[in-house]
Each structure stands twice: as structure tokens, then as C-alpha cells.
Length: 362
Image (cartoon, rainbow, N blue to C red):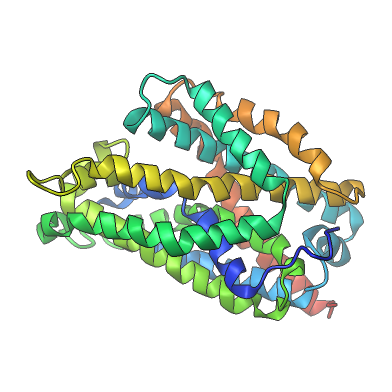
């Protein structure tokens, strides 16, 4: 179902996973987790990582077990044709919904920080055009672009955010576990859904030059993303406090604004930060669009996924514009939390368990 020259190495696969997971949702995690667990938001994020890790390991184990096949094929082998196709449809729909959520979040933050008078529809359309162009070329340019961004842009983003460190007050991170572990555990369970793009593990293995290395690279990618998430949430809460994180639309930008001192060599630090961050959103939307088109093409028996790229774009565009504003958008996409828990945790563990019990593998 893919061209013979569509091959990526394990490092490119790792950067692809990292780049797709570092998207707009990462900028607002501090607010969402602070609303659930107060100043322990960073610990709730770490707990969510611990909860999703078994699912990531199960996806990696499945991929190594069926390294010659994509998700559509091995889900049908494990569960039977009909159930496998249903699971594949659920997965493709999930990727379309996540890409719509990422697109809308990108539009709202762009309007808030950079282009306040530009219509949301124009921003969404412009970004989708770029995503279409990249998605049509497949996993190779996607992974190489991700690697380039991961090496050049991501360290610069973290360096810029490090300017908030002098403003961190450890008192803002207290009291520690004031209400006990229950709020943290609840937030951690919901936090499983923050790892949406890690579900791309289901389909990228057949494209790897060394498929059996995927488990290690997926683990490395998850550790990098977890470090970035904890780093940003810890500094955000430490800078603007629990209440500041709860009430700010984009807490990370609010925290970074505190680093703008008179005489600083960079005057518009938050603007530069957002501009760089938006570059990291492109691999996310393009990667999810490519993945959904690939899975649907395999389900339909197509030899190419490209004919399905354009029909999927209006679906993403329309769903992203359903909410009227950023508040409605946050409420509208909440259904992705249980959806994501099912995709990232329940489904891979069940599939892997059945494959082991039935002794099915390539």
C-alpha cells in the first residue's frame, strides 16, 4: 500500500512522532490540568504519561509483531475482517477529528496573538493548503521536515521559554497534593488523551528501514514530549500561579509575557515564540491527514492514498469551524478525551493481548 521508496529511518520516525505531538494543545495543557489538579498540574501531566505508557508499549509491540503490515491488515488478522475494518474506520475518524481540533486551536491562537483581524476561515484555509501539499508527498518529506523542525526550531522554542525561569516562584507550586492524590489521578486519566498523535505508531512501521527498532524510538519520543510538557507546565504554574493558569486562555504565552523586561534584546518574545510554535503544528495536521487517507485507502483497496486527500480536507475544515469561538471550541472537542483513552490505551492492549493468546504474528 505504499511505494517502495517510501522509507524512513528510526531517527526520522522518532522526530516525526515528536513533531506531531508538539502542537497547539501543548500550549494550553497548564490551564486544563490546573483546573483539575491545581498547582499539581505538572504532576498530573507526569501521571498521564505513566498511564499512557502501557498503551504506547503495546502499540510498539504490535508494530514489531506485525512489522510487514499496517493497522488495517493486522487488525483484520487479529479480530477478523469486519471488526478489523470497524476499528480502522474508528481510527481514521479519530485522526480527522484530532486534526480538526488542532486546526481550530491553531486558528484561535493565531487570532489572539498575531492576526487578530483575520477571519478564522481564512487562517484555516491557508494552513490546510500547506498541509495538503505536504501530505500528498507522503511519509518521507513529512518525517524529514519533522526532523528539521525538531533539530532547529524545537530547541529554540525551549530556549525562549527558559526566559521565564527568573520569574518562577516556588510558592506558586504549593501546597503540594493539598487535596490528596485523587484529583491528580483523575487528571492523569484524562491526560491520556493528550497523547493523540502517538496513535500514528499504528501505521508507520511498514515504512521503516529497520521496523524492529520502533519500540525504542517510540519510547524515546514519548520521553522527549513528556519532558517538554512537564518543563512548560512547571514553569507556567511557577510564573503565573494556579489562578493565572486557570483564567488565561493560553497560559504559556501569559507566562512568557512576564519575561519581557525593559532593554531586553528581543522585545516581542511571545510573538516570536508563537510564530515558531505554529511551525510545529504543520507536521501534526499534515501527518494526521496523510494517516487518515492512508488507512481509508487500504480499507477501500486503493493502490494510492492521494485521491483521498482532497475529499478529506472539507471534512476537517467544516468540523474545525463548527464552534463559534474559542470557549465553545474547548467544550466541543471534549468528547475526544474518552475517544482518545479508547484509542491510545484500551485498543492497543486488547489487540496485543489477543495476538499473544492466539500466537499470531508475521
